[in-house]
Amino acid sequence: MRGRTTHSEPVPDSRDFPTRPYDLVKEFALALTAVVVLTVGLATVFSSPDEKPVTVARWARAAPADFTATAVTELAGTSGSAQYGPPYTDTPGAGQKIGPVSLQRIPGVTIPVDPAHDFVIRPLTTVPEPPAVAGALAAWRTAPAPRQRQWATAYADALGKSPGGDPARVAPGDYGPVPVLTSRLLQLAKAGTLGSELTAAGRLYQTNYTQPLLFLGDSTYLEDQARARHLAGDQWGMMNETGNYPGQPWLWLFSFWYQIEPFRSSGNADALAWGLMALLTLVFVLVPFVPGVRSIPRWSRLYRLVWRDYYRAHGTERRRREGDPGR
Image (cartoon, rainbow, N blue to C red; front, side):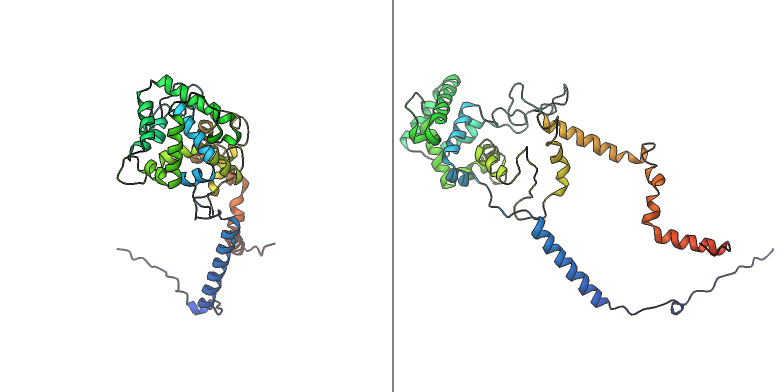
């Protein structure tokens, strides 16, 4: 058997390498101070304002005329929620599309909402009401649907002609029980009872804010609040939930598409923006498999700039081995 000779290189001694003093505690203190200063400074400049929550009670107290007008549209079936379509209502023709495909209608009505009943009538029946309100509820329930819409539509038109939309200055007319119902609903909203009732909606835990958000979304008050903070659909703005910072900068790409055509003027802007973002995400995921695109880093040689220290040292070592003193 032939033996094999092995040659082992000497283990380098750590004392053979250049050294310098290093104060770890000082470096940690400086780094911590820098991070704290940057965090506080950036949070101050870029954080979302700590706004008070927009509640049903706040809405009713700040804009009672708008609250009443919105409640009337719920009864008339002309509000945004009533005509939104899936997943809330099965409104014919409602739903955003991408071409012939209605993405909104594919899952169907998964969160059924009846705005007239859920936002107005049901909250008025949860507690004993005065005789006038109980009589108005009975009159509404016994009237056929066309008659209900006729009352609500007539009252909505009258409110539109009233100075400042003030219900107290509405011209006399055949409005049925609608004025009594909306007046009582406004009282409950100002007291804070309506918001709690819409949130609970017959459930044990008050954690579902779908109904109060839909009701608020039908108003002009919420839109005015958003527009004042540059958060409307045709404005450029983003805000994180109250109390958190620095906001959601990742949403800028979604918000961007709503500012340009054809998204800006399309009734299917949400579906189109979603479809485009899904396509862009797919392209991003498939970058390693797209010929030409996957070779851009190699062609651009940007990696040599990122790893310049390595290539500088590697090139020096190679020239030393080849006997080239370098240039």
